[in-house]
Image 1 (cartoon, rainbow, N blue to C red):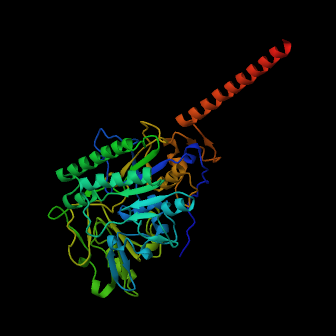
Image 2 (image 1 turned 180 degrees about the horizontal axis):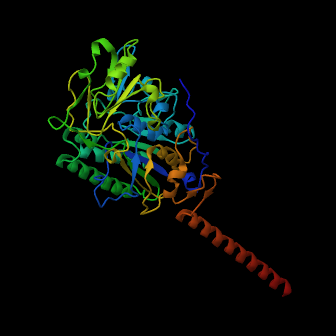
Image 3 (image 1 turned 90 degrees about the vertical axis):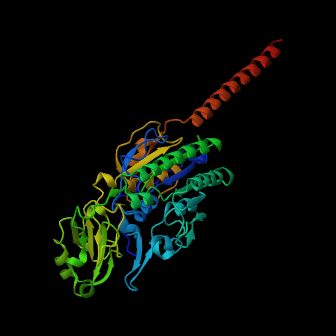
Length: 446
């Protein structure tokens, strides 16, 4: 497997006072949670900010959160898993327990943390069912292919299960994944009553999460990060537009050996031997809303094209346009997978807990920086990654100097209590010694 040198490897982060006292950490992911609708005000979790995603498909941004590596490093490049040698394609849900699709030489945080003595679990989180370098996460629940996404009662039950993992089984880090509002957004579109109702359901669930944290006496012991993997936009359809149909411009039978299209606004082609230039020339100016590149010329800012799984011809559509191959097969009313410069592709980041500042509004940042933040909260030394703790450290009660690697602690309530008890104990000891000395002196004098 090709090794890529990360753009930045953050300094090792030492255990601080609060990590030595077993804080718990929950990462809560709701896919397709975009700005500005998510979450409706007032919402209990803060801070609020935009988390930019690179290529805005679902499963590889989720993997960025857990590994802190660009797509071209972690190798999960599409929601559709595929093999160009066997010409086979697999829906991501059918590969959840198949290690070969997920273990690409980069460790997710579950494995890194448990190798450093933490107890970790994955609840329906992408990649949680696979093994990495032969090692599985200590506990993993994987959703089935037909698992329904929007059952609010089940959502609450899942929260109760996770709270028990923290309080009764001493887990340190859990990732929890819900499949909404992604499914509803695809089916009905992002600007619909159906999706707004789902947003309200998510908000109620977060309220339930806060209540559950209180019931389990975890308010001062649990850090929670609520985020997403991408946004969602309304798809453009006939008769308002001319849809992108690749068979209008190329012959799949004559020129294409394998394709990943019919999946929204992003696609890849493997031309037949000797036909790459012909395919590229035929498509590069074929449609005013289609952007076509040779793999080696794909924009570097996406951090996508250097992985060996990426096919020779890579393309993406402008916001709202889908890319179809031989026929118009894609009928979603809402979608993602577009350039992350569009605001509809931006998403949310909210966090609360004893180690986060209260009522703090952070500057927008890229999702690659969530990984070193979670490592900091867990008190573990991260694997090589592309993020930087300097981007997110302003959110924390403890601050971090990225130049020296030194931590400048703002004493927590627990620290203040310990310091206070130490001072009081010291004063009492001094008074006791003074009293004993005075008594002995008086007796000798008598």
